[in-house]
Length: 614
Image (tube, rainbow, N blue to C red):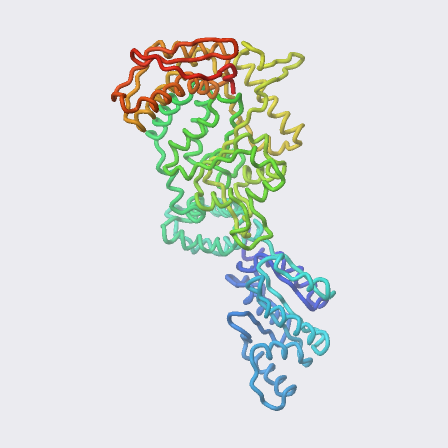
């Protein structure tokens, strides 16, 4: 493709040109701060024109003899000298007696004179430009009563919502154009003309290979302005990155030094991850292995490769499904501890708190606000502050449908429009969803399974099949959001129930973690006999508790609470070393009592633990 021969102007210009002789008032809003692609009369592409430079060339090309501009910072201006001469001539004829004229008088004069077709371009920098709006009303009156039949006003607004409603209601000769972000074709054209100005590559590439680079570069910069592509040219030179390394250029522009988070990950990082996960997550070996593979792929930037959107897609998308208390949230915490130095980069969102219609605003913000303080968007602000974040959507099935509808674009495209009209990129994030869908009941063919039955524990293969089928049915049929399910792909990881062999390991870890905290906070070293662990194990099995959270409840009630009572009541007489030899259980008619044996003393702690399940 020859960019020079096939070059065409920005697509919105065609609409502008079509209505040129039909309408007298034009409102241009949206992406007005970007470079405008434009061809002059000879068909030559004009690079690096801002909106005002474009309008000047455009109207001169259409033989308008007077083109003037006004904004609140620079006031009134007529860029071309020949236009000034004509305007001065009109001034002397309308106002023979010379009087001092200010910018506002000239604005009125441009549209009041009827000898020459004239253009008045008004630039509104803010919604609160009350004075400029009053001026607009006045010159609109002059245009309709006195002005030349082909004179016109062009109003520039940063956002369509800033355009006053009375402008549409009171004037039928208005035509509004919302200028969007450049299309892939426009980005391709612009890159075609500036690619030689990037840092020179040491490799010789064929014309066909260069064409592939251009097309890929254009595709991967979706959501960016042409001005931003121009900035990448300077990044290329500053950091000595040639055009054929466009992936690096894009990442350097979007994330800067934050991208170093992933570059610092190595074999030692994953070795640390293995050790931590082995210690913290019990009975989920298959899930851990699969998650580690996914994270290795994410660390080298290969997420999204099958879909050819590896630049924009999040580093990894993980869906953790399974029963409550089996390690889903704990695994997310471990990933954050290993891969992210700053705990602020872990952002957890419980979707039970985002089930109302206002949830969409709270997470993503509102496009109707110019003020960042009242624009909502907690998720957006997190990603803007920490582009490399671990975002955890807990209990995703509880999210409001409007929230679910925003997720596919983030998961597939890797970006969204922020509340201030900016583009927010999720390309450096890991996104984790957790869910308990399908962990209570399920059906395979005609056979039904009820996981709530006491003592019922199907094989893990059955658990995986049941939960995955239920998750798919939930999103596709119940929620009617198949697109969100398809965005997850094969990244659905099914956690198993906590099974018998790992329960003692979980008890041992939790008890040791608890007494370690006691040591840190009180300076007292607590040790427990083997009988303590056996007793807790017996109670866990008898109560048939669900998951690690249920086990933690048992430990808290039968060990930690009595220990806390003892430490509080006898803190002045306790040595640095404290040995708990046993836990005894006493029963009466309505509840069970537990007491711990500390050396030779028996300290009782009355508590009803009849219902220790979650």
